[in-house]
Image 1 (cartoon, rainbow, N blue to C red):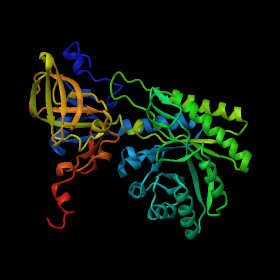
Image 2 (cartoon, rainbow, N blue to C red; image 1 turned 90 degrees about the vertical axis):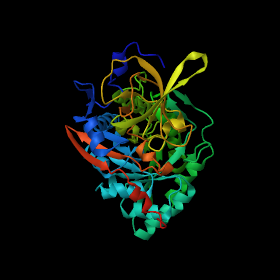
Image 3 (cartoon, one colour; image 1 turned 30 degrees about the vertical axis):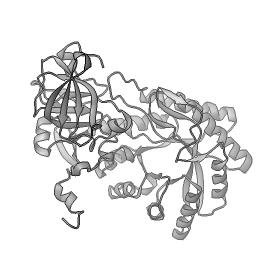
Image 4 (cartoon, rainbow, N blue to C red; image 1 turned 135 degrees about the horizontal axis):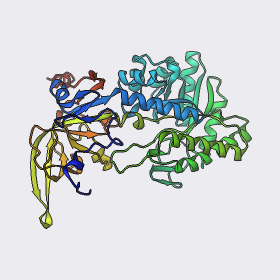
Length: 452
């Protein structure tokens, strides 16, 4: 990471990374959604996730508009990125459905009042209880991920006296990530049914024989944090070719094609994901071209963005606890900045070597930049929030740091490692703050311990 040329550059807030409402006030402190981060930290404690409601809603509208124009019949919000009843209401009010992947996510969406027909359920190992709950709720689509799914969903639907609409998830041998995609050797995974082995075609054949199931189409998901449409081109060609074979061999039309999610966001100013409208337009054109080549009707499309909607809307606030300079080989110095959270609220750096943008949030500083490693308070050497960052050399305990683009896969993957309560989530909008998820307390954790 290049050293900032000046303190001004170090303090700058890139609009590509931060929520749209983020700004520095006259004294340099950050304001998000009209709320001074110092006031938020004082009222709700740290670590704290701030979620810019207006930013999230605007992204939901943008994705819905772009993908509906490209041929989608419904755009689902991928709940695994982050889910709470408030978020479920926000995205459905903006016209999105919700993709759930467990009984717990289903329960949250239903508690938020989301209509069952606007829900889609995933899962490579759905329990009978989860399937029965989905059928009872009138979930619009259940995605079949195995031959066991075929039997279990058909049984649950028959006992409930309904016909359940299903999609078949297929693996097409394409894996995409950021600027790269690989078009071979990626059927070795736990999700979906293989096209090359004929398992996907066999699943469709079995579904067609069961009166309690209604085959609607195919589902394909090729990766995450995707910055361009190139991977979708190969995947779409293979899925559309499969649809044509299903029609020729079984006389069954693929009416819907769900191409999953995975659209990327900027974690660093240097990241350059494709504009949502351009991505949607290109994918729509790719599918239309492949359908024309195969001589089949264009299916209704569906998509499942999650990170792209909630990720940029979230910011994590931490309080600095210790500042420790460490001498490196060659005479350089790296300063370890320990904060009051860590891998229990953001495991992505440890799992994926994820990179983030961090700034001093409680004030602005004109001090020289210093090379830092922002680390957590857990008993693990791998408890790193940001591996390399430039922060002001006058950083002291009690300062607040803000880490951008943490709305997705941070609170949703949080743990209680070292018996740390999980942070709260607060929605901010036009100067108002409202709790989205309460901060856990030690009493909450001890309540689960019968010996406490």
